[in-house]
Length: 110
Image 1 (tube, rainbow, N blue to C red):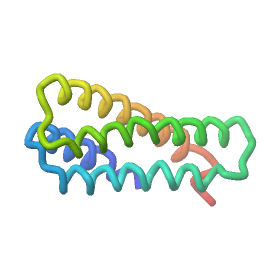
Image 2 (image 1 turned 180 degrees about the vertical axis):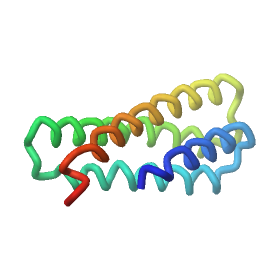
Image 3 (image 1 turned 90 degrees about the horizontal axis):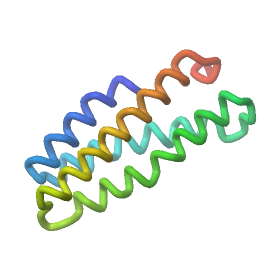
């Protein structure tokens, strides 16, 4: 599951530069599925670890939506591309944090 993150992030970065919406939408869908999977894993887990995973996954919702909204524009100017790149960097870091917690936890065995 998390092995798709680098490819999706690279595809999103390329789509930002070339303004290709179809590729970006597909990559965003993969990232949203990962966040949704982590939420489903922890929906009834009130442990510290479950809460951390849940909050990290929930914190991805708005940046992913903002990135999707930016890519929905007809054309992105340089400033918008720069902001979107920063959001993508933040998303990548949050997904790396999720991966580190989920893969090395008892949550991943469920």
